[in-house]
Length: 322
Image (cartoon, rainbow, N blue to C red):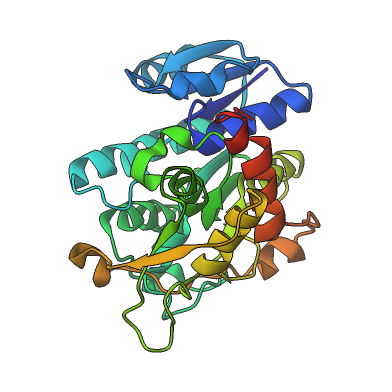
């Protein structure tokens, strides 16, 4: 039996493949669209049965008999993406097709949702809330919210297990080819090497000082542990936040990068692009009560520990792949 990992050459997907390899699983089908990018580098140290292009996989899916579960990490994840049709095809329609396939086969379906569905955070970040009231601030968040709502309204066919994972600000190895969408930890390390400073946005709200904007930064290895835990506990389904449960400032993240590099912090504050000012989240923090209530006991690295592992183990080693 094979486990399918879509987006398996991408950031979170390739790290999940590594974790599955460490658990002894090599019977994996990697589904992605690598094209002319360097994402293939994320696969060099992985063991898997086959790589399949995402469009070809949908055509092949009815004829593949031995699928144990689908872990769907493939998506267009740029919060700045303006092509709504592209977002809808990738983040809603493709996900719906996989859901329906898992329902027919009665196998588990785990998929990536996003904290972007919470919008400006005025309604909180509680995965036990009525999600129909959430208002995402960008098209990416809306496409993820649309699928979460579609799942909520299902009344007939369900997979054996279905888990939507609302990822907060994930950072860590294998994100190197995300370009602008890579984490501040990645960009900060590069800026220190090139300029000796880390550039952060100024704040435009009086209750937040410059660099005081808050995010729930969660290390990718911890995210993968959550995913594998759900695979091992198929009795649990639903929509779950995946974050540390603790908001930290961008300034603290930047300081952690400097400390991991053995350098004195030097932060420069720059103007935020006009197009971001009205859509910028000043605060996110996952409520992980629901995840804890079903029995997940794994610990999440704090920013200092996660950034140290990332910087010293990967970024300082020539963008080493996990």
